[in-house]
Length: 232
Image (cartoon, rainbow, N blue to C red; front, side, top):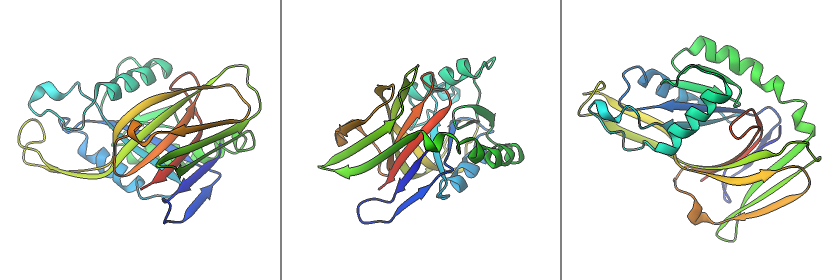
């Protein structure tokens, strides 16, 4: 697994061979989610972690419609549920590197998973190179690696860096919530089965003022095999 973290055209490029992707499924209407949101906010500032907050829509009915909720986020969580063989979906749920899920508010368990996750990436770092650059008003993606028996799936993610919300109704009524790395757009880029690949991504395909990421995963939303991102 190879990571190129780029801080924009005017920023500094960072590289780390031990990337970790943490995806939090959360909702502003969920009373147990603020603690997980706070943990995710801490992870958002770590250079060795891509932290993404997906707001689901199935809690909207209980009094507070989350303004960042999206049915596509719920669909992604349910797809993880099938891959991870979960009995049901829940919030707050964190999925680490597409292969392990933990209760998002369980800091001790999360830290244990994060401690072991980088070591799992060492072997894959020699197999796949994935990079992303801002170019020609959009983004240029490069991907290279050995041929594979089964294809991997490419996902394009755009996110906002930070939102602060006063909750007026529902289970979190009266709370001031801070959400970091809120996913605003999620779309598939197709499959890859090895070899050299280049792709120009139109900026209009993305939403979000915080950054853009490309994830390469097994089984649609299975284990993450490579990730690259740009912060704006």
